[in-house]
Amino acid sequence: MKIFDILRMALKNLFRSKVRTTLTVLGIVIGTTAIIIMLSLGIAMNVSYQEQMSKMGSMNAITVYPNWDQPVRRGRNEEWVEPKVSQTVLDQIAQIPNVEAVTPFYQTNVKMEIGKYLGYVNIIGIEPSAMPALEYKVSEGRLLNADDKLQIVFGFNMKDQFYNPKSRNRYGRMSYNEDKDFNFLEDKILMTFDMSYGERYPGMQPSRKPKLFRLEGVGILQEGSWETAYQAYMNIHELIKLDQEYKDSQTNVTDKRRKKKTEEDIGYQETRVIVNEIKNVLDVQEQIRALGVNAYSMAESLEQANKTQGVMQGVLGGIGAISLLVAAIGIANTMIMAIYERTREIGIMKVIGARLKDIRRLFLYEASLIGLLGGIIGIGVSYGLSYFLNTVGVQFLGGMGMGGMGDTKLSIIPIWLVVLGMVFSAVIGLVSGFFPARKATKLSALNAIHTE
Image (cartoon, rainbow, N blue to C red; front, top):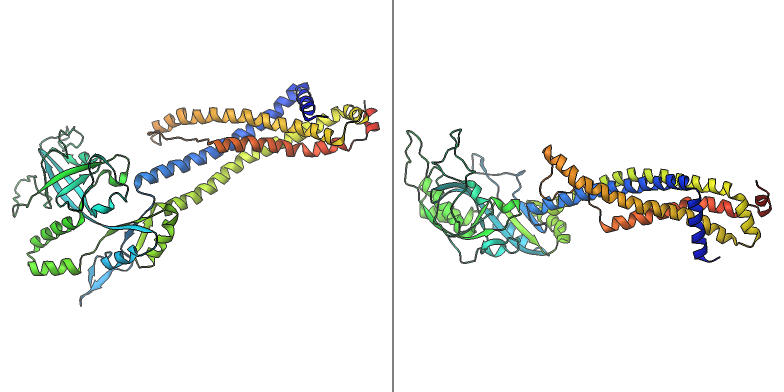
């Protein structure tokens, strides 16, 4: 018999018992839908986590911190000194293979004035040449240049850090939420390390006039990264110089002592290391830790999360697979019942010359068609449920304060999952029909013909 004839015969036999076929297909639909939806939930969680991680910083960057487990002590009185990453360690890190750039961060808090607005700003000193490597991009203006001194780049949400000291809300508190009519790139910017600048407190007078620095805003970073949204960036060398001068002025340190301290004692609380490829991040991170400092990367967190997500997807997929296994048993039961009902038909086929492999193919095709049909319908149902979860489900969770922000999705069905679901359901049907098909080929032709 030709394959087309066997296939047509299989379809005819399936529609002979519509109710039984429908119920068997329904079992496959439920099983396929369960396994696709369960896996899609795990995929959506993994994608959401990766998106959140990417907003927190570059995936090929490593953040280096001092080793706080071994605080530095010096002097006879065991004076505690805040541990920092030295320039010597940075030079060693720069020699590690696959390291593209090493830039220390120098952080300090300043007070800024722009027109009638004041702001408490966390300002970060950075090597200007490292900004492109850190994937910093501007929405307006430009990044820092190597020869910049009092130039500054602002994070996208930095306006939220400024307030009008003369504007109060109904509770008598300063309001940060009003619209600010100033421009970082055009307006005059004053900076001071004196955090009391611009504030008036009853009965208190400033001990000395604060020193003000005129800054030039040259760029505003693009929106998207939480790491940079509320920060401002300056040339690290100029920021260290200004901050050190301010600290020395508060303690009346002489120029000679200031120079000595700057050369010998300066260190960094945080350093960013850029690796050429994400796949090399973990290896470089281990080599950095071997130098006696702490190192953290988004890639490490993502790897740990992927392991957890893998276990979770395995559990979710296993739950769906149980439903599909039950459906497979249903297919096997349906095919065995079909053999008992069509015993005489099988005997006649053998007598008129049908080959055993044709009879085997007939029942295998029937079982596979049940699985394939159930898989196709199950995929359609899965897309419907996925759409429901991503619309109604997201809105419901958003109303409860648990989600619903931006483009959050609870279910993601990639193409490979659709193909896997279809192939898996067809294979399940094929495997389920193997034993009944084998049983059909072993029936005695004479006994089958005499069966009522």
